[in-house]
Each structure stands twice: as C-alpha cells, then as structure tokens.
Image (cartoon, one colour):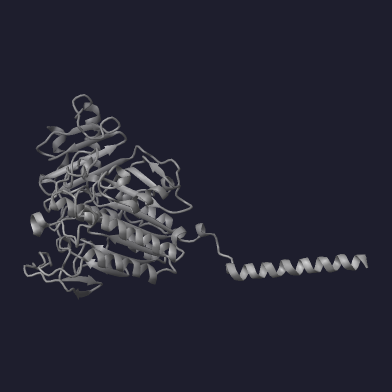
Length: 479
C-alpha cells in the first residue's frame, strides 16, 4: 500500500506538471528562433539641415528633443559621424551608393539622376528579401528618369522627387510611386517642379510622412523591411524668404521672446522628435522593437536660410562652419543608432564614420552581398555598433561643387581643407586639440599637408559631370 501511495502521489505531481507546461505553451505560443539569427528590420531616419548641436543629447539647451535624447540613452551616440557632403543631393547620393564624393555620380546640387548601373542600398536589401520604402525627400532623380526611387530598389515611395519642391512644406502635390497625388494646399506661384509658397495651408507634408511611415511599418511588420525616412525638417522654404520656417504652430515655443524664424526652427525639431517617439511606440506595440535597428542623423550642417540665424541656438555646437562649408560644422552631424539587446544602452562612440559606411553596414546586417563591380569607399560599422574596435586612421574625403571646387580630407587627427583648390592654400587642423578648427597649423607641419594633398589626388576621379578646371587636380601641388 505504501508503494502504491507513493506511485499515486508521483502520478498526480507529474500530471500537474504536464498540465502546467501545456498551459505555459498555449500562453507563450510556439518557440521562437533567436532574434539574432533573423534579419533585422532597418530604419534610417534622416533630418534635413539639422546641426550637430541641435539635439539635447549633443548639448542643446533650449530646443526640446526628449525622444531623440531617449534614443541616445537606449543606444549609441556617435561624436565623429560625417555626412556625405555639405549639401543635400550629394550627401544622399553618398548614403545610397557607399561611394564618397570623389567617386560617386552626384557631387553638387545639380539635378542629375542616378544611372541604371548605380547600385543603391535599397537594391542590395531588396535582393536580400527586404521590403523597401522611401518616405520623404529623394533628390536623386525625377519622374521618368533612371534615378526614380522605384528604379533604384524602392518598392514604395511617397514624397518629393525634387529637392526644390521639398522646400515647400505645403505643396499642391506629392508623389506616390509614379502617381502625382494632389493635396488640399493652394500654391499660386508654384514653379515647374512644385516649389513656391502656399496661400492655403491645409496639409503639412511632414505630418503626412509621419503617418506614411507608421502605415508602412504596419504593412511590413512580418519583415524584414527597410524604411528610409528622409524628413525635410528643419530645412527652410527658401522661396518664402524670411518666413521660410514653415510649421503649423510654434508648439511649446509660442510664448517665447524669440524671433519668428527661431520659434519655427525649434517647433519643427520638436515636432519631428514627437513623431520619432510615435514611431518607437509603434515598434513596441507590434513586438518589433528588439528586432529593429534604427539610425538617426542629418544630411549636413545647419542652415542660414528662411530668416534663421544658426548662432541663436548654437546649432553647430563647438564646430566651425555651417551648411555649404567643408569645415566640421558643415559635415559633422548627429548620429544615433538603437537596437535593444545588441547595441549597449547609453554607449558613446568616438570612432570616425561616414555616410558611405551605411551600404556595407546594411549589407552585413542583412547577410547580403554588397556590389562587387565597383569597390566601395565605406566599411561596415557593425563592429563599432557592438562596441568592438575599428580602424580610426582611415582616410575620409569630400569634394563640393557650388561656388568653386572645395576639397577636404581627414586621416586620423589631421584634417586638410582647400576652400578653392586653385585659388586658396591648403589649411591644416589637428582635430584632437582643435575641434573648432580655429588654428591653421599648415606652416608648422608642411609634410602633413603634402601627405594629405596626395590623399586628395588619390581620392578624386573625374566623372562626366564633375571635373576640375583643366582636368588636372595635381596643379595645386606645383604652386
């Protein structure tokens, strides 16, 4: 009887345990494969003309950016991240192609479309099984050209094709793929590409982009997906001149004793910050938060347009220069990456990185092959994202065509700038001691100058659109 009693007790305990496990399985659902073995969703958010010093986590004192500050607290903040250029179109070309401006097709703000043979990050990810979307500003090809987003790897596009059209926050139309979508705004002085100033302002384009981004995430939640959210905030509507900081309301800054353009700039940035907070909320609601890496940055430094004074909020922080300069203030940008469970919370990286690193980074994240025909200028920054060491001595290069031919190169601590390559002398700065580029030390270190000038020559390749006067970059070495 004793043995039978023990057996009965064991049977009861075993039955109870089996029932408990069955209930647990029903509640928890079937086993899920480890997320690190899956391809992560990739979201790349890019502001337009946001300065290095415009976010709280980069030292801003007066503009409220709680969601981006939280993103930095939950992820990694980079202190030495560089845009592809100091203006819109070439910076975006660099981001998409993984080639710096010595090699990529678009090196100034001219309307030049990407070619059929150009390979974009969207094409690489699409071939790896990603659903791809661009929402916002493109600037790399018009309707009917080989540069249209749908011809460059994006399954879905909603926004502006033309960068001048993107000046107007209240346009009369936007594009959805190949379809022109009319809006309820009235722009009587609208030009051929859609730029102008609205007199009836009903639909704010940024708000439409924020909604479209959430809608795409809802549609693509089964993943993997790539969302390039190219916002226009806080760019000015140049056509509106000193009233160009267009925003529906001044929000928390309405009662501040500030100039109107600065109220507008601050309200735009805080509005964008709130929408980024809603994007993170949606990821959590859909259970995608731990399985999505989100990047945030700006396409170049802060602007002096639409009546805005970049000194008012110290938008370039400790840096010299603004948009259209190859000094640090024109090209060094805020850059934040967040991926819960993979990127350490509250981490800060001093590793120099640049926009041309994004394509190889996305390819590694997606276990995809980057293009093989043309060597990329970028490298994957996945090691830095995971807190591992990376090369800090590689060469970074920029060239910019608008008011002459400007060149800049950085290697390690040294930065050389040639504001006009035939007219001006090369300037040299030691960024480890002089982040504000206040002391030109070219005369003290002529051998460093010559070394970096040779790096400029090595980094440049003439293209069909961009050639140095006379076609000879080496001319300046003989001066």
